[in-house]
Length: 282
Image (cartoon, rainbow, N blue to C red; front, side):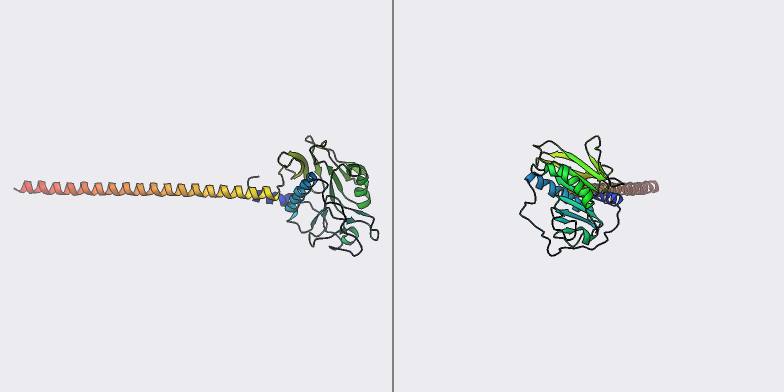
């Protein structure tokens, strides 16, 4: 990828195709709590991972107004039963309107269930994320794909995913040679990388051709680099233009000197001819 426009072309090429949700955006339904006393992220590792991946999703899916990205908000999946609720770290609903913002997500009102869910493992919830939530998300709620990841570099690396098969059975997604997983639903590859700056094992998304989806900070850095390159190229162009103008001025000055020298020679020849004529007439 050499330019930002290259990525925009790929962004449209690889964007998933899906039907619109059959319901309507529902910011809030009275009687369904939308907050609890639990912190948004269990640790700083989780916070960094959630913020980073959510930022990448927001940037990538911003061109489609019918992709909703949720972060640690309640999902109610059975009308009338407030106990049927989950709050995944990140979830994506293909087909649901991006706006307005929701306090919670109500599957029956929206006419859609989350398409993909991401949970980041912590010591207190890891067993639930690995076991209980697999059938809960994929069968009870109707999620298409479910991924878990361990962002804490002090813990053993773990990245797994499951999807619903054509007959509704649960299939664990086979990793590639690098340990990455491909989301058929999002048409994206996911691989983790240990970030020595943040000290977080970051899960990151890539386009099918391997192009990374950048964060806002990385995107800003790319723009600044592109602007620096543009300014450097403009400076080089100006230097080249000044050199061209200087060379042109030198060429014109040389031509003037040559014409003047030629005129002097002609004048000298005319004067010499005149003097010879005078001598011949004496």
